[in-house]
Image 1 (cartoon, rainbow, N blue to C red):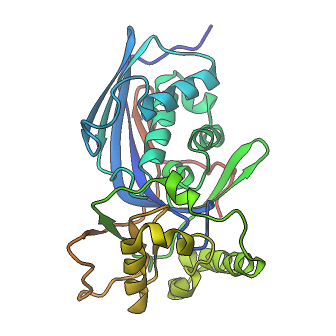
Image 2 (cartoon, rainbow, N blue to C red; image 1 turned 45 degrees about the vertical axis):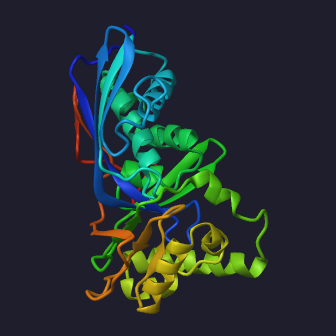
Length: 314
């Protein structure tokens, strides 16, 4: 008998994420307690998307919406497509700010598709879900923590992306500073040189290794561990306000970095009460999400996650 779809609505909650975390360019990521809530059901035909919150009135409302595109690619992986889909997105993650809004849409789409296929969570396991999401996104640093939760180390092998999930220490205190203006990953990547000095690469390798220890064992080392020479300096001329805020936070001892490709700034240690970022910035203290993209409805109830995509936790 062929694959079938569930008739109920399936929903998924996808966390915001911050990638790079300073030295971990395209490899390290952290899931944050700010969520988009997505739901979908199979229909008799056509694709419709309702968007509420962030991106409402701006994002596509049909088959070209990123959630639907990710769903269709996941259905194709399973070898089956539904006749139609009705999708609703309640978005809280700021769009194009370096907090993983596109990864949340992609991972949400992958998870919704898995939930809508009867037995889909077994047919497409977490390892396959990560590979699909990273293939769509182009790199795994944001999709890994969005899917798995926690602090993730991601890499790409010939057959696709893999990741391990680690649990951050209690002393990790994420605060995001979000500006009004947008930022785009493509333009931020265009600012990066094709080559970097060997001593800068060695510097970052050491800091990225230290960051793994600092985030999971000893947060007192986060300030040193978040130093970077591979990307933030090259991107600074394109987002001077972001660079200035990172510098101002670090000047008072806060382990601050550019969140993803920016322009949001992420602080990983406590920010002094009297620190004033300026009216240009909206700040919010967040926690670390430890569950990742949660699927509910249909024939699944997947709030408790199993092993991470690489096959083990660390």
